[in-house]
Image (cartoon, rainbow, N blue to C red):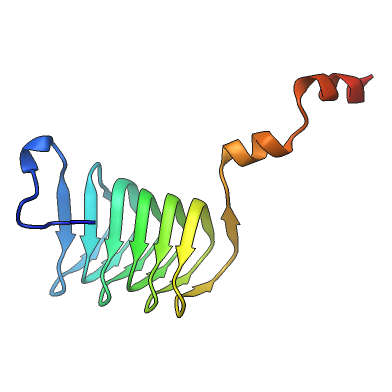
Length: 135
């Protein structure tokens, strides 16, 4: 993914936030860019573009982001367009995602709803069929 690599283009306007392995943070984070958690974050993460939880990272709270990659632990609900659960990761909470990848060994304890509004629209009858059913 290239997250925080040396040649990252910070002039692009992309914002990176890090909770390092020595850090403990308590509270709600509203992140417009990307967040990497290698320490402990106790609270919710809202509106992020990317959330990456390192192998030693832990989030206790809900996570809402476009893309979530979990290599550590999340204890809370996850809402994302794309969720990737790595082989050493665990999520305890409900998941709502458009797409999800779970590597062998990744653990999830909760309910999963996978698919987006597009899937719901495809599975619902077209407007003409609705009109026929209404008559």
